[in-house]
Image: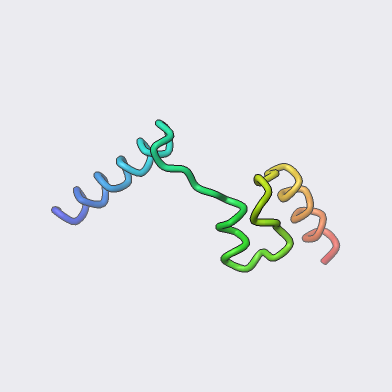
Length: 61
């Protein structure tokens, strides 16, 4: 029971931090680090372009 409560509090804290701007995630750097080398880590993330390119690539395969 204590584990579930702790997990809930950590999740709440992360969501509150993202919502209030206390925690900033550099998505382009994150995706580049995990292996998406087509993303430039120095530029902001363009979500619509990334999703469209991925969907077109999936349709071609």
